[in-house]
Amino acid sequence: MKKLILLLFLLSLSFSSCEKDDICDEATSTTPKLIIEFYDVLHPTVLKNVTNLKVKEVGTVAFMSFDAVSKIELPLKTTEDITKYSLIKNSLDTTTDNEDFLQFNYTRENLFVSRACGFKTIFTLDSTTPYIKSDTSTPDGFWMQTITVTTSNITTENETHIKIYF
Amino acid sequence: MKHTSKFTFSTLLILLSFLVNAQQKKTDSIPPKIERYGIRVGADLFKLTRSFYDKNYKGLELVGDYRITKNYYLAAELGNENKTTVDELINFTTKGTYIKAGFDYNSYENWLDMRNMIYIGLRYGASTFDQTLNSYKLYNTSSYFDEAPIVTPGTKFNGLTAQWLEVVVGIKAEVLKNIYVGFSVRMNRMISDKKPENFDNLYIPGFNRTYNGDFGVGLNYTVSYFLPLYKTKSTPRKVEKKKK
Image 1 (cartoon, rainbow over the protein chains, first blue to last red):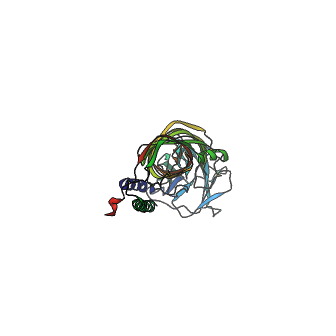
Image 2 (cartoon, rainbow over the protein chains, first blue to last red; image 1 turned 60 degrees about the horizontal axis):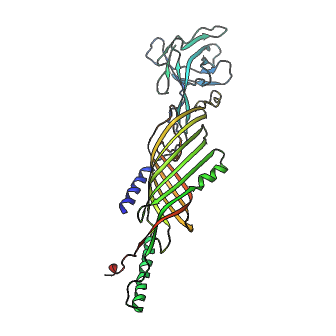
Image 3 (cartoon, chains in turn purple, yellow; image 1 turned 30 degrees about the vertical axis):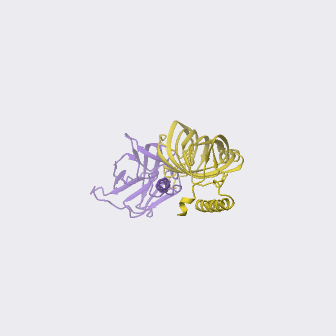
């Protein structure tokens, strides 16, 4: 009988490996944002910082501000297969500011993550036209010279998806 | 507890034997203890009552055990559950049937004609069920866009299965003749389960909520009826041996 109790005790010890699973851990990979890196168009391997970059969805007012960074993260809409952004360089300077439109085309898939994190959306950029670059109605020229897609599968935020040369 | 009753029992036996010795030098007159063997069947009141007050839950569990030796009982539970889990991000419905089979070991030394149990046991559990993913929210760390509306796929995943091991600790007390009230707590450990595609078994009938995928807890509160089949007479242990 003592052996039996010992056995049951050991067995129940192995049960105690539980951990909290009702709060979504920040380290968990959930809906990824689009990772964009900026490079110098003259030296394509050198990262280049953008000054006073203002990014907003076309047709809206709320914007995201970035300054002196070469890498930005932009969310993609999880309700539509396109997200059209307006990117304004030197946004604080009315003479040198320049606005370009960048529309991303993609397909979406919802994946189960966990009880605490629910589901996430992953994106696949369209293979023929992953993005459409366009200028404003009063053309001020493109500040973004070249755009390349590094990976069209947007599943994590650990890698760069888009490279912009300017 | 066990030792205390053993001690009192032994002491009383000695005293009794002295008494008997003093009165007459005859044979031991302590009546042999009658052990009753039979089958006990009942139902879990916890699941039954929860079906009334919780609109997201319907469940029934029948329990039974059969005494095979003085301390060992074969034991089983058979149940059916229909539960809708409403979590912050996910809403799903689980429907299914389960069976648990194993044994109980009664570690309680009963005093005279009492027939109670304090037991530990082990079960093997198996369940077949289906999950319906009613709705879910998309988790998004970015708040730039408005929160995406709740997605309601209503996908049903059929033919799912799970099997697990369960450690049981419980008590059973005879409250009226042949009527027992019991309470037990259980810890479950998953052996294997067939998961739905792009979803998980967050609740399994019989196993209950899954923690970290393979851990679960449970309890039941039972009322059962004991059907005696046969009796044996066991003479009390020889106390004299211990007196050396």
